[in-house]
Each structure stands twice: as structure tokens, then as C-alpha cells.
Length: 363
Image 1 (tube, rainbow, N blue to C red):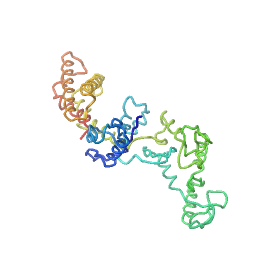
Image 2: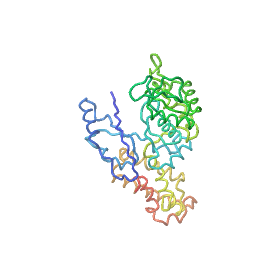
Image 3: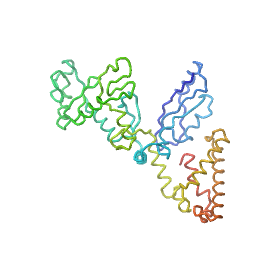
Image 4: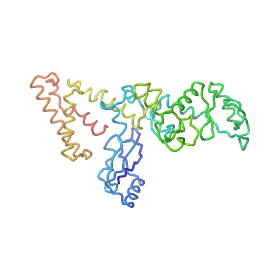
């Protein structure tokens, strides 16, 4: 039997240059697994904020933890192999620290991280326009709600009655019940979209809080459909096929702001693209891309997949620069335009310093 245990860690600060330490909860988790006769070969998966290997040295080859693994989700999103639409990839380069929200609006009931787009802000605002109610007068619920609902069986606190009247005056004239005996106030357009999406439920989840669908037994969760949530299949289908990134759910981890930092480091004055451009070298030329891929594969095979060790990483970079220098020299000698002679004259260590910096995790 194989068991994979996820250890949720969110490392978000742009200023944090310290390695991610191993907390007592993680060590205690491995001890519990050992007590249950679960092999150390079953990995503890680091999840959340995994960006630079240098941050996780304490987790690697550590006998106290056993086998480690990582859930590497956000950083590959902008690779050429990523299937994300270009608009999604471009949006990721504009994010600042704090632009990602850990929320629980998902119909799955689980927490998830997503870019704080107008779509997500609307869900936040919707939940802010929320008041508790009773079906009979009791306790603090001493006033009958007279806006947004039909009938007189909604009792609320006086302060909430005032808020509800204010929201109604702003155009949020419909009150929708939630499974928690609360009411949220929405516009007529929002109400129609919510009801249509709930009616059009395709059963993509085993349990859906938004539509109250369940895929077995009586096909109902037994709870009222929750208008504070959304149809996850609808929005993910739309954004995956090029829909508006501002009006859909856009997943991203809390370290996504680092994309912008990387681009500034590479394209700004003194960055790798700038330096290579000064040397007459095309940074994304297929020859260099091929060389990088080949060198990495050979080095990983030679060192059993290990690149986290400082000495090995330095050795890799030195071998990489040596190959680059050889290719530059051959190219210049053969008169290739992609390897101009003046590029060979500039110290290749300086030219590729930013490559090394990017590989090791930046400054």
C-alpha cells in the first residue's frame, strides 16, 4: 500500500531568503507514519510556495524525514509546454505580492488559491452582503425583513435590517438563502446567472456545494444549494479556452508574484537578456535551448538526479559555461551569424552570470 502525505506550506514573502525550516508538526507526522509501519520510502510532499530548491535543502537527504517530494504547481505555468492560454500566462507576470487569495468559495468545500480577479472579488463582496435570519421572532432577531424576500417569515436584527435596506437601494434587491441560515443580497442579473448555473449543473463533482448535487444515493447533498459559490466547471472551461481572465477563476499559488521579479531581473538593465544582447547573442536561440536541455539531462544522469547540492550545482554551471565557450568559439570560427565574433571576446562567465543566478534561485 502506498500513502502520500501532503504537507501544506505557503512560502510567499519576496524578502524571505532563508531556507524553509522543518517544523515539529512535519517531524511528528513522519514519526506517526513510522509507528504505523509506513515505510520511509513513502514521501512527505512539500506543497505551497515551492519555487527554488535552495529553500528546501533541509528537507533533502534528511533521515529524520524520510523520502521527500514536492507539489510543483505554479512555476511551470508559464513554460512553453504549459497548456494555459497566453492571456493567463501574461496575467501571471503582472501580479504583486498579495494578489493571490486563499479562499473557500469553491463548490468542493476545500480551500484553494487563485488570483484576486474581479470574479473573485465579486464573490468576496457577495459574502459581505450577508445577514443571518430566523423563521420566527427569537433572541436578537426582532425585526421582520421587508426587502429582498417574499413573505414575512424572515426575522433579523435591527442593524441587519438597515444594512439590507441600504443594499437594496444600491441595486442588490434579491435575497438568496444559504445553507447556513443566512441571506445574501445580489442584483437581478446575478440572481438569474446563479439560478441558471445551478439548474444547468452537469454533475462534474461527486459533491457540489453550489448545486447540492451528489453522484450517488439520492443524488443530493441534503443541503440547500449555496449561492455564495459558483459553477467551477463553467468558469474553468471558459478560461481554459481563452475566456476573460478578469471574469473567471484563475488558479495560481501564493508565490506567483515571483514571475514578475524574474522577468525584471532578466530583461532589466544588467539582466541576462540585456547582457546577451550586448554580446550579440540571442538568449532564446534554439541552439542554446538545445544545449541547456542536453547538459541538464546528462548531468542529472551522471549525478543520479541530484542538483540541490551546492558543489554539484557549481560543477554543473562550470561544465555548462565550458560548453558554451566551445560552441561560441566554433561558431565564430565557422562564421555563423548566430555566434558573432565579438560575442566570443566578452568573458563568458560574465555573460552567463545571470543564467547561473536564475538556476540557483536569484539574488
